Length: 280
Image (spheres, rainbow, N blue to C red):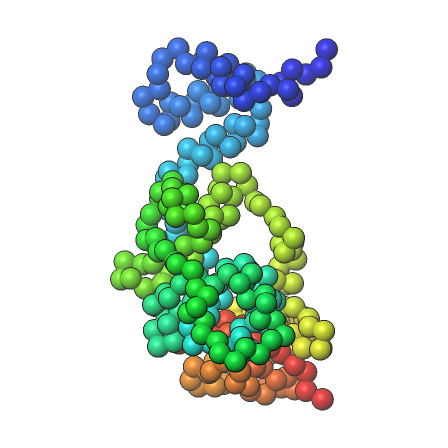
């Protein structure tokens, strides 16, 4: 006979689990003890036990624990033209981008879906207003618990939320995938890469490179064979910002040590994405 546990249906193991409840658990600790007992007795397989325990823990976790911090957000300004953001949108492989007010980096105007911009690739529309393409954005406090976040995603039929701090400023963003991964584990898609460097630096067909501004200087030097100092700054974006001595505008360039750096994405506070070219 085969292993019956491999073919136990959800209804079956729920029935078997309920048989272990000689008394109703009075708190989460007691419930977890029962679940672990069920796992040790073979009523639950290891994966089912892990998912149930993770589901119970979600109620104790806060959004700030899983959000993408502000420094790593790739955002778009609401006065941008397609030429300003399409290359970054394609290269980042993200499906959604927060759109911020041109004069206030803490004012979220909406969310831009990459699929809504596909028809603009290679086109030069006579009139373009980014606001015509925006979807509603919703915000959650960084102190919100994940069970509340999941309900918000369900009720609003949304996949991304802007995380705000106690002062109303942007603290980060969080996606439905981020929340679900706390229950089922990492969800890899075709854009995920086990090599972290490839997430920071991407070679382009024209010989240039798209580089995340948060790329550590040591990683940048290893990749390009350059010798930028990391004594005063940790990231390549920090060096570029220091050289400009002000917040640069999109498409502004600067040349350093045989390299040209062009700003592809930035807001009023930080640089997000750079185009890097080797000078002849």
